[in-house]
Amino acid sequence: MEKITSLIRTINQERILLIVRYCTVGGGVALFEYVLALLLNSKAGIFYVVSTISSATIVLIVQFLLQKFFTFKHTQKEKMHVEFMLFLLLWVIALILKTFFVVLFVEVFHFDYIFAQFASIGLVALGSFFFYRIFIFK
Image 1 (cartoon, rainbow, N blue to C red):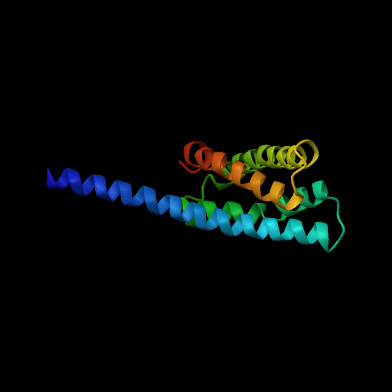
Image 2: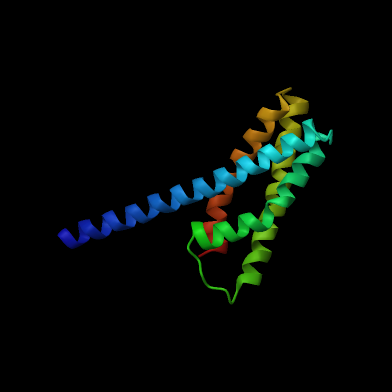
């Protein structure tokens, strides 16, 4: 019984650490993306839709490497090109969704662009976790 309890604790601790790592990387990347989009829009005068797409594009490779090696501790390199292609596919879907949500929140619901950007990143990050875990870094 003690071994089973110990195993359950270990599994739960691993899951908690995974979620903490994902939130740390995701939060850091999201903050970077958010600040970059804000700077592109407010300081460089770039239209908010273009700044959303540009900031997401810039963080793509860094995010892939951090999620693969740090968050999911997936050190296998043989299929890294396949993982990156799946990651890229998910990224494109996420980019479309983030952009859709930003436009929806700003144009339809008349939310502030800053809030819309932040909320859209959060919504998409939540869904992405499950796809990373199940399909990409299994």
